[in-house]
Length: 404
Ligand SMILES: C[S@@+](CC[C@H](N)C(=O)[O-])C[C@H]1O[C@@H](n2cnc3c(N)ncnc32)[C@H](O)[C@@H]1O
Image (cartoon, rainbow, N blue to C red; front, side, top):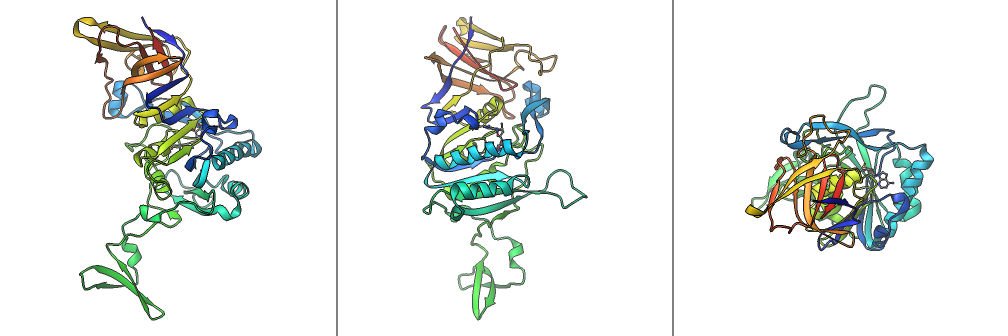
């Protein structure tokens, strides 16, 4: 009944935001079309760890119910022939980031001890030394401890401005005044009954009111690394916490501004941008990253560009004309990575109905498993023959389009 077809892109709603598969080494035209428009470019590229990252995502209804990740299989490789090859990628990314920014825009580059020094020199050259704003230290507690040297427990986030009139409003990231800051200070209460701590320096009294916020400096120790069982976890290796991205974006963007992430992975920066009512464009070379990022985003206004899978898989769907419903019973496929006792329903993570015109899939209704909704909705009200096309995302993140 339904035949597998190829589509170039999927459009949800008016399709203004962008999520795409693409390689930064051959910057796609859809990204180049945004040059000069972004208020913020966020880059969290590979760190040159030499690692082969595994995907840890639940499979099927049971997996989503228990949260147990299975099966594990390769996600992406952070391996390069050497520093030269890595720096070529980084240079492309940093150059494109600058091109993407408008004059008031800023750029974040997230790395760790391995390449942060080289990146700093590179960014100084591309943006100009005078455009450097911060080297943010994101310190966390995670994993093992070294005995050969002090444990390496921080990442480095460089912040650059495109021009002298960049936008930065620190008052958008207030923090409660902590107890620690009151050390050695006198305590007092003013005429209105407001509590404060104070210190006298050079004969002048400085008051710090308990109800007044403080603002973050460039060392962030209050944002934890995502734990294995964190509900925010998508199963994508190297996923960053939303709180981190929100702190980065809040002072430098306003609703409606464009945020771009050229190595979006699981889409943390895109979700943060969406929460802050910014427009966004995200790209990643890994198609599974695109599928996972999509699962985190609201799809009322999004274009997704990601090639569809070509492996033979059969969509099990039927029309229940009597009850006015369209039923979808899963995907019949032999994916080498799926568990042996996989069922057609378990093979599916999400599906969408829609129509296809000129190789574009226009999505109408969509269903997606999550920890809240582990069971995939299987049927929807539809007049006979009304559902013209279906898009599926299998448990490995591969998307396929079908038409009749
Ligand atoms: C550190 S991860 C990003 C994680 C992301 N910030 C998150 O919170 O999930 C780096 C990403 O860069 C992507 N990547 C590697 N080489 C790339 C390239 N040439 N072009 C675009 N993306 C690339 C990887 O697939 C990976 O998803």
